[in-house]
View 1 (cartoon, rainbow, N blue to C red):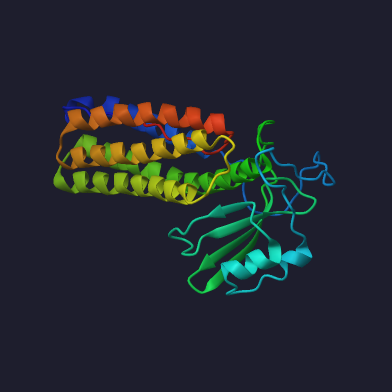
View 2: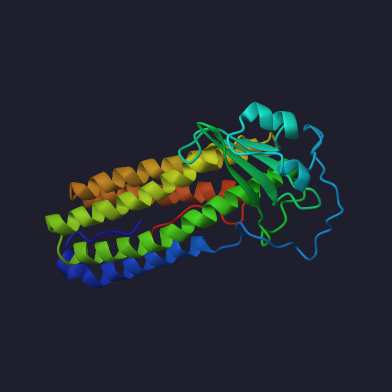
Length: 281
């Protein structure tokens, strides 16, 4: 975490250097490699049939004609009757009160799926979710894990885009606080850290709503637990700043970065490319 000097006026240069480190560190996690949109991998074999691990049911891709049967406000049960069991599911979360179903696409890769999300009235979103730039999943990954890696990386890509702007604002707030830790500047810094916390919370909530396949499930759970722990550590640091307790702020900053190391290890173990964890310089 970016340390705040105990004597802001005499340590402005060091503070500004650490602000720059903070901006760079958070920006580096926002490299975009996945997303929603058209396009195919030119090296992919579209005739290759999806396969599943021996512990999973066979993957049955959905055609465009089948997907066209799904209409607005259809309930979960009707979708399953028409298309069968989903490849992946998401439990209800803030964006979609009824959760989401994901189905494999015919003649496509695990990163590309049909996405059907539900609100209180039934189907509220039908999306062809493509990730043309998503690197291949690890060789040992099941089809479902490959699909989840792409969907989660897409979520992280979107949230990291917001995080860049938030990080810049935190840098400005830290610089103002370092020049003069008055109430106005303190409140501004607390507010900007709160925006950072909210970003991490949204990422965690969205990813935690997925029901991962058994394949590497422990690594996925470890990653989510680490993100939640980072939220707790940063919330405690925010409270310390509000109380002008800089030593406690530094302590929770160190904890935040230590947890981030664990999160990154778990993310890499699962096979993520974009999903990682922020560091504060």
